[in-house]
Image (cartoon, rainbow, N blue to C red; front, side, top):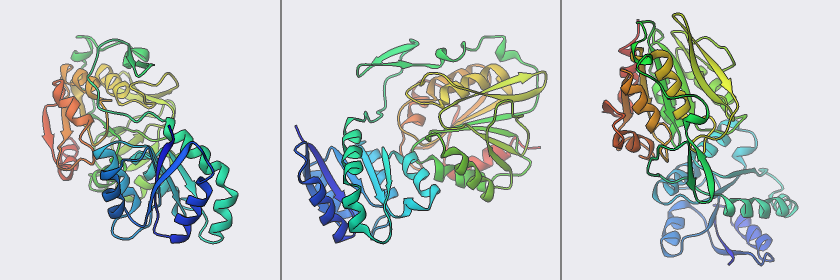
Length: 360
């Protein structure tokens, strides 16, 4: 069966060249080439593609917004092909965080020649995307390994033991705030950290994002926030007025030495198909901080973080979930509510106020 591809690009040249490039491929069938996402959604309702090749800068709706819409309605592999990705790492990071499988940077000039010269890479990207298993909200299961579509899915047991009653009775120390986010998270975190108090407790953050993009993401947050934001490094201290962002490709765990929190950056298996995993972070915070922690789970697809948030709550932490209306994808918060891990549901615009409440 051929891979059904829909091309969404406002350039008629790009649409034509991409169709010409893909035409000789027996395993790829272009089912449409449209100038913007509004046309694309009409076409998709009639014939849903296996892969979408998507530009970013387009009339009526930008590609990132459309990508989020696709992921909210029916998660589908998307290949971003955009000139904006060539010199803007934040755009690339946002596209990957929103759910894109592959990002290809195309030049602003010499487009026709570039697309022909890069035909092999583009075809390979489409084939790779078609094989990609899109994350879906799943029922939580307690086993360390959960069979899922033929692979082995690890939970947080693969990285550290569950918290105990002893962990729930740690002495009062500094507050620590743990945040987990996925699809739609970069923009949501910008809003939260941009309106946060400089005297807030120390924050540890997992944003599902590939390796090499979390560094630039943390740097961007640092420019818009009154607190210090940095990509976490092994043995960094968790300090008031500072946020540590988990590096892509590594798990982030919080440890305690007396009254001081610090982090460990560890390799390990994918947990809930993610590394970094929110469940791993939340469980480590439950063990290290107990009732001195605040857990916040934000917009995102799937169920990563739900079990960890329940463990935090059982250890006495205050736990919050972003509300459905303000989520790009109401997946992770919904699952956390379903398993009883959430103490209160709050709108995105009120999350910074929740954090500021615990400041000095």
